[in-house]
Image (cartoon, rainbow, N blue to C red; front, side, top):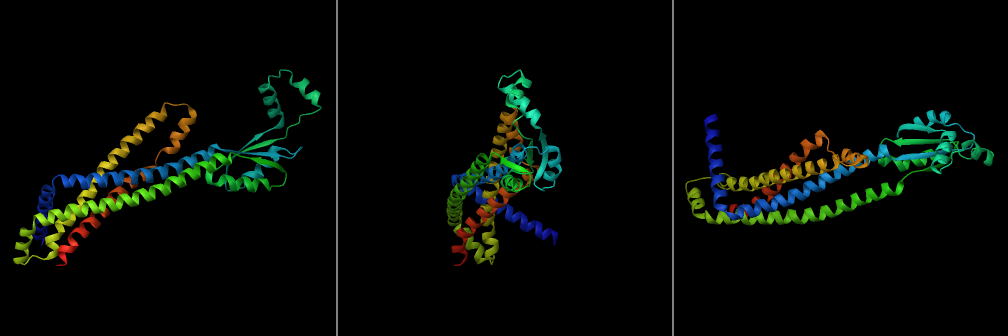
Length: 301
């Protein structure tokens, strides 16, 4: 039984390789089309993951400033705020500390004189609240605004909303482009496989006369289409890896803010493993569909 399967697999391998050799430059047309498709698909998927990571990274950097009512201590309110599940950390900025920092920024050296001139410190205690993720910031700000003793809440909502909208717009555009390229890749593979089948029609007729089943006749052609997808996935993965490493190295040597961006753009270990598998699966599927369309008309005769 094992010997029979080895013989069958050997036959499929030889016939697939013969078909690829006969395809000539049409093979490269199909492979290059699939490569472009998978490269753009990989860019879209990778960018979606990276933007999500960046949003989560910025979620721990974007602070929600909570201003308390006059006379209320930040140390007293801190345990209440920490009870919210969206809160990662809380820093208390007491009004005396904030007042000294403000006067120093304004160039005032006589802090006591400035305070006496106003009668008292006009500021209130402030809480710097970090959310666990960027997506939770707006909801967290609304909750904090309803807490008793909170006078006002501020956060960088516009920057967050703009980043989310850009990601949504890019995703929608990617879906349209990838859809069109998928149809193009399937059409090119279908044409390529069909031409190979036509060029071997005499061999196919002989095989039919000696009793070969349609599955064994046309299975090598189907495997050729799958091979196009696998090669395209490998090439596109190489391009994606090279570009990603170049961007990482470029951002690593930049100021602290860009280092934070670089950390947010890094893919997790599971994503690094999942991305090539997705590309391989998608490429194989496109090749399979294109080759099935090519042999379907001949197989149904």
